[in-house]
Amino acid sequence: MRLPRRQGRRPSRSTRATGARGTFLLSVLLCLVAAPCSASGYTAPTCTPISGLSRVLHAPGVFVGDMHGTVQSPAFVKALICHVLKSGRAVMLALEYPSDQQHFLHSFLHSHSTDPSRALLASPFWRRPTQDGRTSRAMLQLLNWIRRRIAEGAAVRVVAFGWEPPRGVTGTARFNARDGRMAAQLRAELAGLPPGAFPIIFTGNVHARKTKGLPFINAPPDAANAKPLGYRLRDLPYLHLNIIHDGGSIWACYGTCGLHRFGKPGPAVSAFSIRPSSDPAYDLDYFVGPISASPPAVAGHLKHP
Image (cartoon, rainbow, N blue to C red):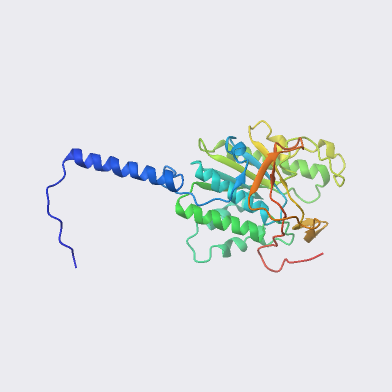
């Protein structure tokens, strides 16, 4: 049933123009009241608070040092992406995944399937025998969150920049070969970054270091000449962040791959916080409170030492 058309005089051109301006102003006001809107009209969701975030948002990009296999690091990155989107900037999230697996990520993030995770979890990287936390349940949750934001119109691009040297290359030589190749891959990706876009380089906290050498007890021979990814890209004006926690557990490969504990966990925190770092290898620390282990997303790899 059609409703009768309302009779009346057709509005003049000036009246229509005034109405259009009013509609535009109303849209702007709604964006300002509800949440910042991008040029495409995307409205960012509510974000987990991050104390001290302004230090990061004023930078052109960041390295986020990860301890693979926690719930909290991917949750921090999710919150960071959320706040960057709220600021009206596009995001490029760079992950320490093999670059030859990029097509799996792209297909998953832009999938219209009822079960988009199936193809991603079937990819070689997510099913490899050694699960070091980069393919954890928490990482899958982060990628699913990004997939939903992209479907809503958010300007987020995820790129894989990882690489593994051939077998036989070990110790510091292996570390330098890997980080050198990853640095070259990242430079190529960053060269095509749209103006104003914010890169988040999410990688292991050893790779995120901006100083030469690996001053650790278990470092390989000649570790003083190790050149981490962050050191190789130190000419870029990005901030280098390292995770700081208050005990708990992690799923990682420390000798054996599985659940490892870091003492009794401290009290939970309701917000993340960013503070200056006392380690010269980083500019800032991000504090996540107690950490909790996130096991592999693919069942069958749940081994406990």
